[in-house]
Amino acid sequence: MKIAVSLAAAPLIDPASMLRALEEGGADMVHFDIEDGSFVPAMTLGSKLIQDLRPLTKLPFDVHLMMTNPEWIIPEIARYGADRVSVHMEACLYPRRVLGLITQYKMQAGLAFNPGTAIPSLQFCLPYLSFVLVLSTEPETTRGDFLPSVLSKVVEGKKQAGLAAVEWAVDGGIVADNVKQVVDAGADLVISGRGVFENGRIRENIRKMKDSQQPNT
Image (cartoon, rainbow, N blue to C red; front, side):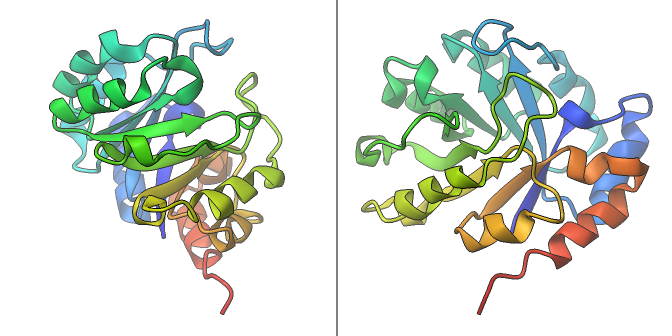
């Protein structure tokens, strides 16, 4: 079980210290939400932050593109140091082609789904698809409520032929109190911002979440 820490909730006054605390706490990745203000009504982080933070840590950079027509920015974020990129199924007319473009730049490619979007058959994407990202909050606010009903997408999605072999990630409203529920649904990766940065106790919060992730036996 892995944790990607979302910088959407991060205090960025001292990024070097923040990243060091993530490493020491046991974070597995750093997660960036890059928004265009159109696909979702927010613009939290810019792509330059990837470039600025890349020299400060060896943690993998996981970039979630919450934008329409994301193809144009893929070469840029690859150059800045991203390791993996997800694009929204709702924003791509030709998702297989976009996933292929991501892999051309030597990054892992993922498809993201808003809470209201069902998971379709994804076998046609398998040559390029490394992970599926299921949003568990509506992305219109920074403090959206966790929606446990979306976890059924993970359960059902992993039943598709070939889809159990890709990574399944869940993002939105995940804290220590509900992370086990996410793990038990089959998530391989949880993405958390508020749950990690709450009260400034980064190391303790990550460890608490990891201790809470043991699946039912």
